[in-house]
Image (tube, rainbow, N blue to C red; front, side, top):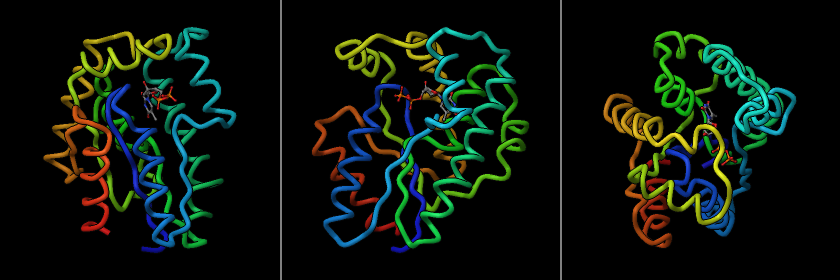
Length: 196
Ligand code: TYD
């Protein structure tokens, strides 16, 4: 499994970071070189996005979508493509499907979102960690303050529905995230083992 791109997706609070880390540990124990990364990035564009999400900047939804796409272009050029070329497994927490799920839930047409993301490398595998929006919100509230998207339960419900629809239409793999961490991780490892 050399030079593969895996994306982990799901609503806010679904457990992406935990599972990306555990998956990376497991792949490393099997001899793979693994890079874990995420979007929005900490690059120049990613930092503007994060500022906006914390409420520091108000942007039209289309501008927000273009920033996510621009951040992704930089992410691919500076980190993802070089790592894949070097034969590494890249696990990214969020990628193109986040834009399709969130920015369409914020009212933008899917066809336009697909077109501004056309330059993005296709992931070899995308796993959606699925759970009800209410459960995910409770999890985040236990650990920290909510940002603009996280505190919008209706938005999270629409995002979840978008992920589940895309899973059916585009073959993303869904795991039930409303279970103990070990069970969810076991399901993810099984998918990675069979798919790659
Ligand atoms: P997230 O991965 O949740 O960041 P963190 O958990 O580290 O704070 O991403 C921040 C938010 O950005 C999240 O609500 C999803 C949203 N987002 C989009 O709306 N579109 C995108 O294309 C991406 C990558 C993220």
